[in-house]
Image (cartoon, rainbow over all chains, first blue to last red; front, side, top):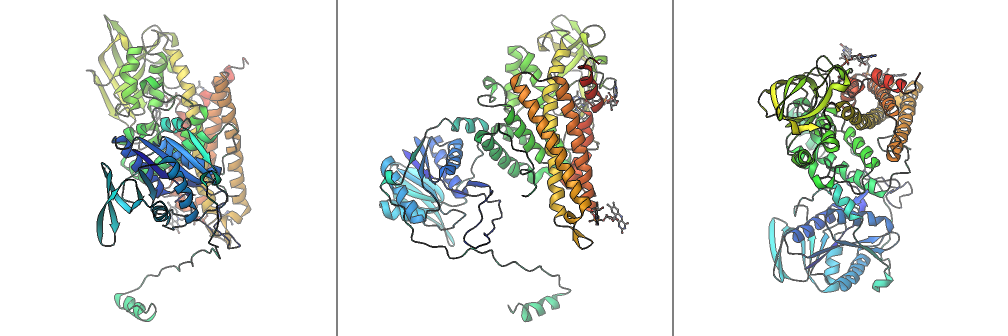
Length: 249
Length: 390
Ligand SMILES: Cc1cc2nc3c(=O)[nH]c(=O)nc-3n(C[C@H](O)[C@H](O)[C@H](O)COP(=O)(O)OP(=O)(O)OC[C@H]3O[C@@H](n4cnc5c(N)ncnc54)[C@H](O)[C@@H]3O)c2cc1C
Ligand SMILES: Cc1cc2nc3c(=O)[nH]c(=O)nc-3n(C[C@H](O)[C@H](O)[C@H](O)COP(=O)(O)OP(=O)(O)OC[C@H]3O[C@@H](n4cnc5c(N)ncnc54)[C@H](O)[C@@H]3O)c2cc1C
């Protein structure tokens, strides 16, 4: 069984992002970038399926300019077998990403596509679902457990108030939630081996997709700064403030 | 431009994306598995057993060691070594690095000079993080003057019988083996051999030296040998050729110490700059007082010089032309730099710097072990001067 995993290059989760002065976007100048944490979980899940003998090949795909090859190499260092970069410029919105992924799915014919439920930059939470709609494949989103059973996969989903398990026919799409697994660290020998794994580059045209844009960012601004807290003298004081200042009771 | 641990590193044209990838992944490991506990481990005086196998898993322990024993050599060069030492020093708890990486001084004698059987017995479990190996050179009566050591190993059939003691031995409390300098021949350096001593041999005992100025997380020990019987096949290198083994080993140790000291100094700069930009006195930020700005510039100036010197030494090592005297002086350059930067950073931090729990306060206490261990500043200069045939 072939597994396709999508990985995205995003601002490292440790970085405190700043808005650009002109409010057009966040400032990515000299900012540390990393693989999106949910995508990393997707890679880990695929690699575990391979280690368990369920998957035979893991292919990591990323969409972006040349720098996203770094995140593909990370996926390869974590255990993916080969990489695909779809070369694009500037930001691409979820629908375009989904269309490009559909192109890759048609080329690669994977039995399982694993994506992060969202990326921590745009927080869109759309790509997996859109890919499901475009390909007509079954989808199990927000997965906290993935169990492949013959030509079926059972996906346990994290939903409000509990867990829901859906049985899907393969080929299927899974998007990962935080608790699906704890990704391993890439080891030095595997980092060195990753260099030698194949990485193919396609253009959107190769996949028959036109990169279009339907969304315009109007403004990016930092959240309002929180005021410093205060210490209250007594419970009566607290109640008074909650009543008269915060007006919550 | 900001001035932090990363931006205060001069560009190095030898660094490529493989090196960057290693730094990235290693830092991630350290930030999650070590950093959050570093201070507690130091206060507790030891690091947990599980850290060794974890460090082995990411390839940290095996870096540069032969693949046949579980190490990684393919594509690994001196710049990987530098990055590794930098990232370990960035923790700001010298005792963790000293203890976790002590095989870096204990194992090379076996790898470079030991028999195949010895290597096969020792290297794989050490590189898997299951067993520990230390280096035992220093004695109560012989430190800088290694050639005066008095621990004896006397031949008895197929064995050596070892008597004497070693002190200040890093990792000594948990070591399963000690690569030990022993006297097998006459006086002076020509009578010294290296012998691998298993610590489960009858007659071996040890005492913890756990009250130290710094390196609290490291298990320093005094080792005692009372008629310890060791197979002669545990000899590392030729009999009475131990001095060569010891001297060769020192170059690697000194490069590791120098690169770590430079990075520790950079941690001091990072912390000082960040504080100077926040703290206000007399109506302005510390960073706006000229006195403080000059301190910061001077720290950076010394860091630049040390970094450039490190690069020159690594280039020479790569080219096979490194002079031990240059490495010795680099070690002094680095210890003076970390001494200066630790002092200045402590000054800039003011009273808060004197409180335990910060990297600067710890590094301040760990300057001296670096300036004394692995060859003291005086001995390093002496070694360099001797090479000039003055
Ligand atoms: C925490 C710690 C960990 C250590 N770990 C290890 C280890 O794992 N294995 C190991 O073998 N050793 C270890 N050492 C020992 C270390 O290598 C020695 O402390 C060092 O070599 C100095 O020896 P000494 O302490 O006997 O000082 P001494 O040799 O007595 O020197 C004292 C002072 O006199 C100076 N001096 C000596 N001779 C001369 C001279 N000819 N000219 C001018 N000045 C001179 C020295 O520079 C020094 O300042 C460790 C030490 C410490 C503190
Ligand atoms: C163990 C200990 C015990 C103490 N005991 C007492 C006590 O009993 N009672 C008490 O009242 N206090 C006590 N102190 C506090 C001590 O007096 C202060 O730490 C000291 O005055 C420095 O103040 P600070 O720590 O706020 O540093 P800061 O004032 O923030 O100074 C930080 C650094 O900036 C430098 N700096 C500040 N302004 C300028 C400037 N204009 N130009 C150039 N450089 C500048 C300082 O020299 C210092 O290096 C104690 C401190 C310690 C560590």
